[in-house]
Structure formats: C-alpha cells, structure tokens
Image 1 (cartoon, helix red, strand yellow):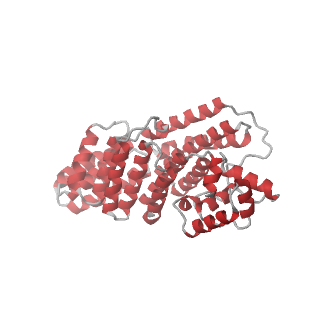
Image 2: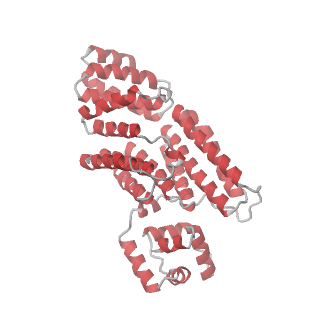
Image 3: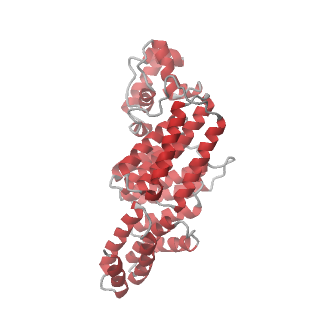
Length: 394
C-alpha cells in the first residue's frame, strides 16, 4: 500500500523519506527504511501517523495493510535483503563539483553499452580493471556533481546498468564476492531510478551467479523475485530473460518439471508483440539464445536427445568472435554427447572446446573445462578420449 500511494504522487523512496523527516521533525528515516516497509520486512509503527498524513491514507487502513504485508512478505522482500547497508549513492550534502547535464548522462550510457559489447569478445580478467575504473568514475560523477532531477535519474539508470555489466565481468573473472557487492550497488541505483525492469535484470544476474556457485537454494527465490519485480508489463524480451533465469535456478535445484515450464514461458513471452523497443541491455536476447538455455537445461537434466540437436543447430551459426560463449556452449554439447553414449563425438567436441578456452581469461570456461575432463574420464578406455585426456588433463 505504501508503495502504491507513493508512486501515485510520483515520489521515489528517497523523496518519501525526506517528506517524512520534514513532517516529523526527526531526520532519522532513510530510503532503505522505506524500502523495508514496502517489502514487508518491518512495520513502521512510529511512522504510521506521519505516513497516513503525507500519503492521505486512513491510519487504521494503513496499519492493517502494513501488518499484513509484514507477516506475509511478497517477493520484493527478497530484493530488500540485497540493498546495501551503507548507500554509496548518497550525494554529498554540499556538492561543489561541476554541473552535470543531459549530454554527460548520454555519454555515460554510451560507454556502458560499449562495455557490454566488449564483454561479448573479451573475458572477465581482461576487462575487469577498465570496467571497475568506469564504475568508479560514474559514481564520482553522480555523487560530486550537481544536476537536475531528470539528469540524476538518467545517471542512476546508467550506474545501475554499469553495475550489472561490471558485476557480470567480475563474476566471469571468478571474483564472486565483489560481483555480489557490485550487483547490490546496481540494485540500489535501479531502485532509486524507479526502473523495476533494470532492478530485475540485476537481481536475476546475481541469482544466475548463485545458481552456478553452490547457492542454488538462494538463487531460486531471488530469480522468482526478479521476475515479480519486473511485473507483467515489462518488455517481452526482458521477461523472456527472467523466465530463463528461473528455469536455470529450477534446474540447479533438480526440479525438472518447473524448469521445463519456465522454458516454455520464456518462449511464449518472447513472441508477444510490444510497441516499444526493448531496453538496450537486452540486445542479445533472441530465440537462438533461448534455444541455448533450453539445451543447457536438457543437458543438466540428462536429456541428451533434446539437447544435442539444439546445440548443434545453434553452434553452426554462432559468431566465432564470441570465443568464451562458443567454448561454454561446446562444453554442454560434450556432456550431452557423453550422456548419449557417444564418446568419440564427445572427445572431438571437447578437443575443440578445450583449445578455444585455453587462452580465455574466464573463470566460467575454466570451471566448464574441469567438468568436461571429469566427464570424459568415464570413457578413458576409448582411444579418442584417451588422447584428449592425455593432452589436457594437466
């Protein structure tokens, strides 16, 4: 209820916190606290009369709604837990930096997209240093400069998008703890910019990392919360991506039927029409990429007869300049061939995958290489497999 009435007034969470401080004369409520109320993590008992006043809601109605939401939190409560404890986006109280205009915000957005495109062809450890420098500079631009409300919102959106790709790069470099901190920063920026679809993308990216690093049970509710955060009106392309992340989380927890349903949902929503363009950060989401996720899910669920045709079809058309992704997709084809009882085909594919990934500075490809070699050990008596193991086992 608080969130709905806040949004009717066009207020951000930070603005509501500011209004409450003015109404109460106590400068102690923060944006993070407002977020906790809206997510059902806390009941704002002291603040109820002030909330009722500034939002024009009967106090009894507001109290019933906030108590109910606290006892039965919605998926947003999961995202509330990710908000950073100390907000690095707080602007200086007396900013003395240069005036930041709309062009600076557009320039930042362009650099963010350039970094995304660079990630298509460069691995995490090659990109991590310039990516972090870009994020540091963006934070300084926002915190130290002066700007209008609209420009500030554009900067926050760009920072959220930048934090998502920087977190992705850090994760690919194997720096998972730092990636999580960066994702939390990005979530805070997206929330302050009131961009729920971007917030969902950042939360979904973290869910994907958790699903791949032994935190499957935490990944699933986070992936579901990301889908809920985006809502039914988000662009179909983005919803397809969020359904795919739910499918992967279900796969990693071993729920085959739920994973298959989520894959179907992803394909269904991708075909839905929409009058607007998808967000620029979703440029890579396509039917072919959904087919790759289908195949990966089928492989993890040991259904090679479904996985192999999909992977072979995608790989015949895949851009060879995207070396890391090509190696990753080949790694799933190796496992699918092995599950299908085709060790010779598995060995041939593994040799290509391992050769491609040898010089790729990616933790993800290194992990997949180890998975491939362990699986090939089951066929060590096959000459073709033995040759690959002899060359790459070390």
